[in-house]
Length: 113
Length: 115
Image (tube, rainbow over all chains, first blue to last red; front, side, top):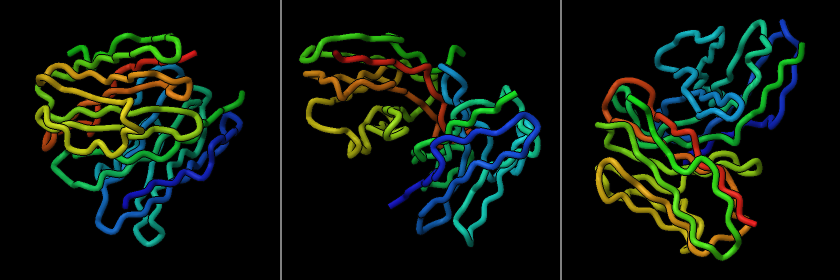
């Protein structure tokens, strides 16, 4: 069975501080991993995906297959980064798309001024 | 494209009443998903469809929940009878399997409150 674990329900940092949102997964195959972000009362939107290896809004995430982790990092947090962050796993690898996503329970990040 | 459209945005109903949530996926997408979001459980996949056919409904909590997709541009999630513990935000999402872009496009959600 696929499972995504985000151990921190709440995370609070000060503006300018580094931030790391943890994500661990369990899956027997080769998953595709994603981070979604939900700003206050808005729809969920894709932040980044591991296969693209890009940095979005200063965030990066590296897939560590040995530790089965996909932690989200940003060196200097901004107040506008305050949001709900969901790590997600797709058990099906297709070209760009996926059959379904399994989400973690989310981490609410608050960046204080 | 207007994206995934859900209606209503908010629904307040009394326990025992029937509730119907609606979703219009992005045109051309061939998969549709219903998720439920709560503080305790996060995002739970309830059911998803490929080409209008239900593929996995193992996440549907109980028989009070049912979902249909009569055509490629419309889906409903029905709760009958509703209970206070059904209060949550229900998201619909669509995707194009094998296509480029984000794996899932979400709607704005329906916030359901059952009193």
